[in-house]
Image 1 (cartoon, rainbow, N blue to C red):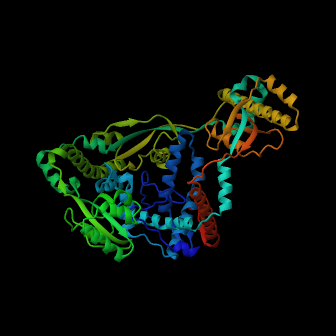
Image 2: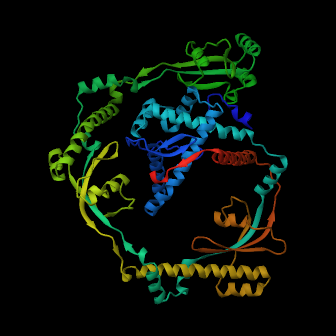
Image 3: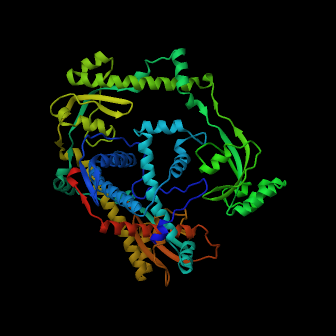
Length: 611
């Protein structure tokens, strides 16, 4: 298998990009940390993982979790997230070490092709160097840092990509999976919602009181605070900036490249394996044979041959060097001699040239003013933040507000685990200096364009909630729990009666509760005739031997009674995508096994108290 792993797969122009294996690479929303320390939180075979690295990954994962859960997010979940993040980072480091051991590399051409194919960096369907740099700046990345990270990511992904090549399927396995995939099932179901039965259950007053007393430590109103704060924002600074014509003209000249279009060339090519065949085709073209027809007949480039070898328009930096060097010295209508590259021999025909051009100032005036304002505002805010931080350290917020002409604002009350405020804002508000010592906070960088200083306005201590305050919530909780138990007990009882063959008693219980079957005719695995949860449960049931198979399931405050009647495998055409899906599954399993082996053989140390 290792020999297969070592072989790298290349493609013409288009490069296959596989998502990061463990933790998705998140460019957006990831902030740099400057801890100024060399604290080590874990070690993998002698290679250290710094706290700075960990915090960067943890904050990105935490932000994604907060966005997904909203108000359901809690600090406890953040605590549980830390071990998962460090484990993912350990796996990533082990993969990097394996990639290095196997001699994997990512070339500059491969890296450039991947970045230029990223839709996030495109404007009007084309890669934009300005947008690329702008997005990196916005997310606190230099081009060097980002390209190093992306190169490591691509190198590691070669491992999984080659596992896919080493995986295989036997015809018997494929036929069996095809049968399972095509299988259809006829079934009926009854779905009961616990909320529909809350009137049929009664909660005793004593039970409510007992629940409160047994769980009293959970019924409290947490400490909450509100703060005064002053914000210095790029938007506020930009409002006071105007651009005169002279400044705008100078800026236009400085940023001329931003408003320039690169030279692009549109060509066709025929790719063949041997120089002999390339020379033969070249002679046929000279004798007047149609280039496009020859490309369709002979070219090995599957991506362009059916289009007569047409590659569309492209700029410098997209094609391999030998190909590119030839194209950008040719004249329109010219056909090249065979050009040798790593892919074979190319015969190239240049069709059109779009010359480089600079958009006139008037055409880009609005964009130019916006860029100019942002640039001056960025320089101004850099100087103002130093003044802001110094004043906040020395004087009251009222004086800071007056001297810098910034509005003093007051927040609403919020608790420490709130998701309605920025995590940095909350951390500063609940810091010892602000919460207990009554000091102004240090300068908080909420984002690259927003800075805050805050102080405590008012604090309300944590307090035990009285029984009368929570009585109705407890009753609601207990009522829902009892109703859920009631419907689950009902469907389980009916399922057991049917399974035992006591159809009369089962039907009587259904009639008593006015329950009727909802029939589904021949559902497939991706059927929309019932919810995905029900369909999945139905396809997990054993085939009925005599009569039908019955089952009861609980689904989030719902109870479901299932009756599987028949199973069949219809005649159908083979699913062309199934082999790839199965190979993907098998390669993932192989990959997980390799990760386990790496972990078992690695010298790993985690310093949990430093996370």
